[in-house]
Image (cartoon, rainbow, N blue to C red; front, side):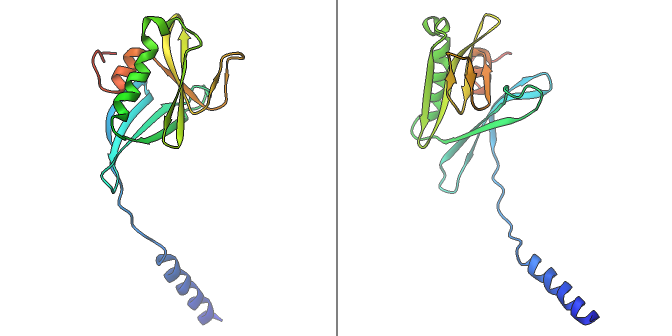
Length: 165
């Protein structure tokens, strides 16, 4: 009986050790981070995949869950000039015309995924709201998590001019 138990124990150990596979850990480089007090509000980073394509990851704090520290993540490839086009779309919320337009929204399509951007006024300051689902202007609701950032925070996130925030 002890022999059978010892045999089963050793065979399970061998089987479980045979299932381990090591994988290469991909490293990312931060482009920018936006902090509030001790927590990160948003970060933008990039990495190169196996095909040497640039993959960007936008991570932002979910303001829908104000008592929890949860983050939403959105990843996209840099096809052509995608990162600069994305920055320009975000900056479009801060033009004189769009600052005052509470209904200004943009759905940004990245291949098979979309990111929804909307005008968010907070204490009289224009912010761009970022979410994985559409913002409903009529009842002021949103299905998924969201974050909103000021123009200075967008500049800091993309490591662009005037990022002394």
